[in-house]
Length: 440
Figure 1 (cartoon, helix red, strand yellow):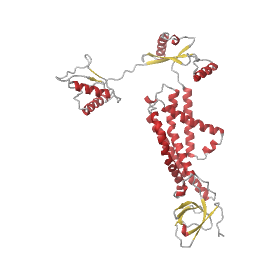
Figure 2: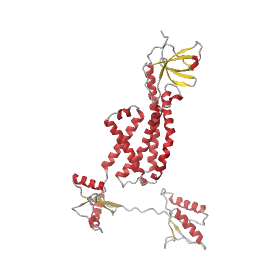
Figure 3: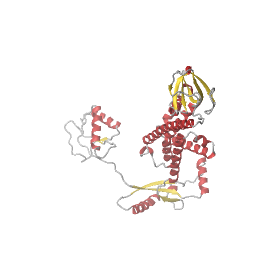
């Protein structure tokens, strides 16, 4: 770069904003000779990239940043320097396992914070010993264990020195049992949410039984507590305080809109449109149903991430494959898939209701969509209608009026019809097998 104080200052600020160290070259570090009026500086461009092409990317990044800042900087020589990874064997100094009675006593004092707990319980020291990968694994572990015992015998704190009567030297402890439990809860929650999305009668049946109610409560706690554990101590938790109040007003129009889609999917099996008078409690319940299973499926992977982070603190989700983006993307994909499945389930329920109506069975109500059995008598033989002519001797099904028209479904012909209210006399009856007035 040009040997001027302002240029060096601007380059230093630029590299500082990129978190790249900048320094004069060390002795014998480079053979490049600077021209008159120019000076040599070493910029350590620390980037994440594929090894093949990393040098080109680093140079291009520096050139683009210098061009944007109007700096007189030229990259004369660039070389690839990879991060050094030294193999280390980890050993834990843990307190010896105590009887169950003393473990309960320890847990009680820890929860009540009395200070009378055993200070040697759990892992009290963690030591990493350098090792060579050229030696076989059993020998490598034996050598590292010997070195760890020698180092653990000395410490500034007397109660943290290795004592064979109090401590045991072991490899890192994996909380396999708790992780298996978290995975089982994940699978159970997934199955319950799937069942809730495909069967409207399953949740009331489960809620009516003691074990079913307990299962639903455990799944709800698993998702709620796991989501809190995933959000805490992250930058995201600061946004929850204003995102939660914002979500409530958004849910007010969203719930009936989702319920409308459920009702439309149900009526689509009859070839009918949703009427304006179907908005009500059933519409709200249908919207809450689809919103609950969708949000539950969205939060389920995040909850599992929170539990894994809590049960095994050595797994940092922010630096591993279990990061926010894959988990949030997986949850969103599962939520959308289950939402579509709910709509398909509503359509299947409409198909089953249509088959039951064709057999002469009364149709139960479905989230505010209730079938009315009516008898239709046209005012004249030439009265206009769309579709199939409705019979006058047996009831037909109606799901409400659309302005001055009424849509009908004919169980005997399994077809739909539509006509104006002024062109026929509509008489409501109680059941699908009721006799129409004036029929022989």
